[in-house]
Length: 108
Length: 217
Image (cartoon, rainbow over all chains, first blue to last red; front, side, top):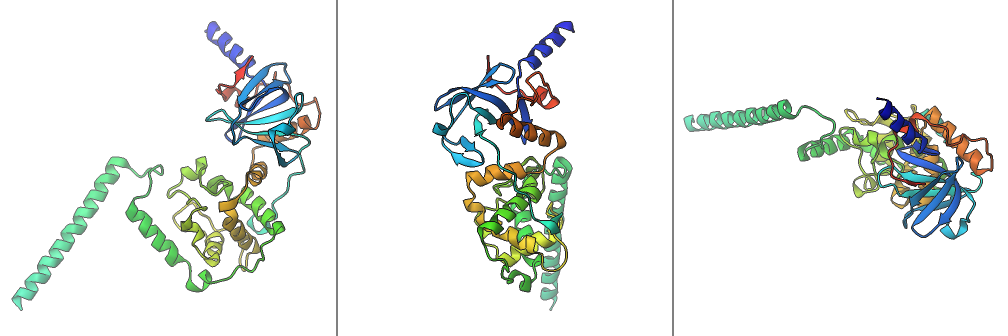
């Protein structure tokens, strides 16, 4: 029992800043390495996470669609990782724009 | 005369036998499989449902033109509205591929496809405004001419061409739990340069539940 608890505690401690959201997981930290196929992020807890990129991964800077070349090492990012195939769906960086609101009064 | 009567009796008997046999087969199927919403509707059910949906929209209503003129502002408003009210079942891209959508019976259609896109503006409006009986589609909007539903019709027309940027924006507008809203706020602050966001010592229930193979060192 003690061993099981220790193993569980070790697993939880290794998880890092990764949250589930809308069926996806979010990793936030600074970019440590960046290649065409992977991004390595150093999380705020000084751990690193390497996430696969593919040609569908979107790079969003301050709400605008940009390219991977706009992302620099050391930049703060939030990576949205598909929970099924574990590939980054989007890499968000820059100051987020204000979120637009729905105007659908009659549907509330 | 007798022959004609016999023919009627035989025809009636055969028809009754076919009906009883059909009901028996359907009943046996129900007893064996139950009425799970996970099943896909049969071809017969799909046909009947389409006919019923078509019949459910009054002829005059189906011919109504959209009173809203399309513009970028209208599209943005309708997009936000769709993300907030419709995407839980229909998905942001209109595919219907969401956990709730796929759990419904019948499943929501892929609205990017011709089956939906062929419907008139009036039919789409009527469906949004009045819902569809015996499905998961509720009636939205209040009485009278509901401009918000007409704007949604414009966005539904746009679904086959919705862009990746639009989908990202819509994701931020989908209904969220308190925990998810808090997480979003932390992410915005983090990206803006704040170091106050929770560190990775934070160990939420959602984090514990994750079993992703992201490589960590």
